[in-house]
Length: 224
Ligand SMILES: *Cc1c(COP(=O)(O)O)cnc(C)c1O
Image (tube, rainbow, N blue to C red; front, top):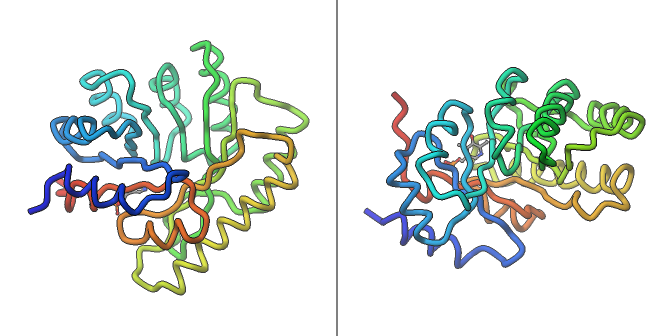
């Protein structure tokens, strides 16, 4: 079996310098996270608030935690004092709550807008029209404690390269459209978070600036 270290080194060799890696640590025990930390990894992604809250105090404070799973409005307050990026912002109501809690914590919160690009019905996220309505609203009613840093999407769980390519291109097009229509003057709107263990190379070739990788580093997850 390959070690966490060997897996990380293998992936790192393939990542262009401009692409950030989010090490997806969900379901993994803190010892595994520490191994990744000791390899130099500093961006960790969790999909559940409870799990994030349980692990964060046990690990070094220079880790940038990304929330990558669906976030309920009533849970924002628990993570607002420390979370590095919320990648799964998908409604105005949620953004307003993030802004409110960030303000209380005296911080400016980085977020990504999550888009629905997969065929599966279950995946959360906005579509382009919804995002336009939301961003138009924000242009009239700004949220000063939020910085929208780009877009995030989860592709369909498939090996079909054509399908994946289509979905990654779709997210890239959404990014380009929003950039020119709403963020032309913004340096912070620059991230496209897409690509996971099975498809990150393709995602990078389609413009990903951030990939989220779990299985390829830690092996298969055992869900209870
Ligand atoms: C679990 C998860 C990943 C990582 O998936 P792997 O296939 O294990 O690399 C990426 N993004 C999100 C949103 C996830 O929930």
